[in-house]
Length: 94
Image (cartoon, rainbow, N blue to C red):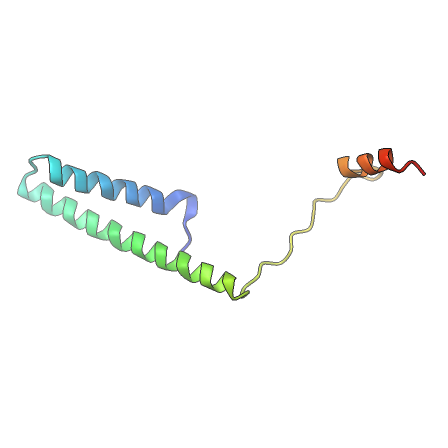
């Protein structure tokens, strides 16, 4: 299953929008038009795959499948408390 690493979907979609805009607004030669069309088609397929993967991931999570293991908090230095511990000590000094 593909993931949207570092905004991969957003980057592909942005480039696809640039291609569409260029083809709609500019006078582009045949060779460049064909190259842009091919690039756009490839980007559209990539975006579709990423969206389908995201949808499958959401549906899986909604069913409770593949729950990630709980993340343990980082270890604290001996004798070090958290801010929450300090607040509790102030409220209940016993």
